[in-house]
Length: 124
Image (cartoon, rainbow, N blue to C red; front, side, top):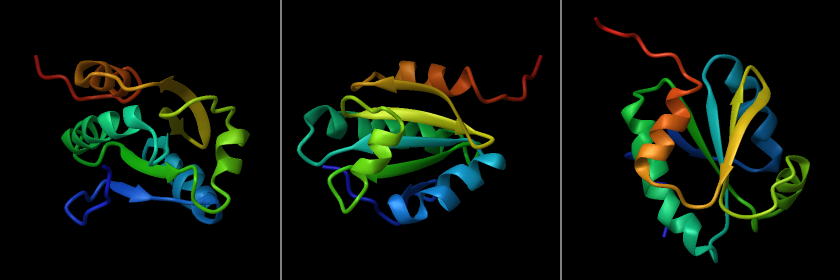
């Protein structure tokens, strides 16, 4: 079961009230991955540790935001972004939804997804 713990500096929980500030505005300085998940969703719990690990490997080049769709009015956010199933992960850059994927995915897929959108320094 996903539980936000203080040991994950690049992972935060967000709700409808603070989504604009913590996702849209923040994505102008750092890309933000938004994980739309639900506690009853088995694949969500499978995906969460891989997402956290992949984001931590990026050492601050990307932020992970967790949106629990069954809390408060968070389902409105899922509706706003046409989320049809859980988990769904959407990447925001410069305030824009640039890409997404759904379902539990293996670590290599998540890394490739992040790297396809976030520049890395290459050493030759």
